[in-house]
Length: 160
Ligand SMILES: [Cu+2]
Image (cartoon, rainbow, N blue to C red):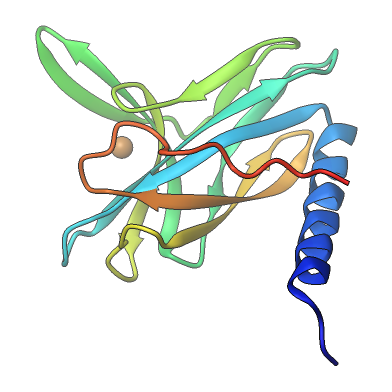
């Protein structure tokens, strides 16, 4: 079968819409996902994104899974006595109705523990977030450069 590029984009858009539909049903919206390149031999990577709870019920981001690492942990970086420390949040992070949780450098983040390969700029980390109520939500994290502090571009807008 031959698909034109446009058709492939259409199929991708439809798949994206179906994922978004599932997320919408649970009132959880994920945006701005990104990861950062690692040096060869690094055992951990990071993941950042924003989660909005547009529903009327609280939900909890429990963590996630990815084929790129042994496990995905939720972490929080904090300055304590002038020293940046990082702790795991095994209970997850609660998100109140109408609240937005921002995972960003120096704050909450996903820790990809036991990286299976070096993360190179331009690659995509496929990740599944797990929510207590919304369940699993698939998200792709573009890998930004080693020194990146944010995503370089918004994902392309889907239009019909
Ligand atoms: Cu961490």
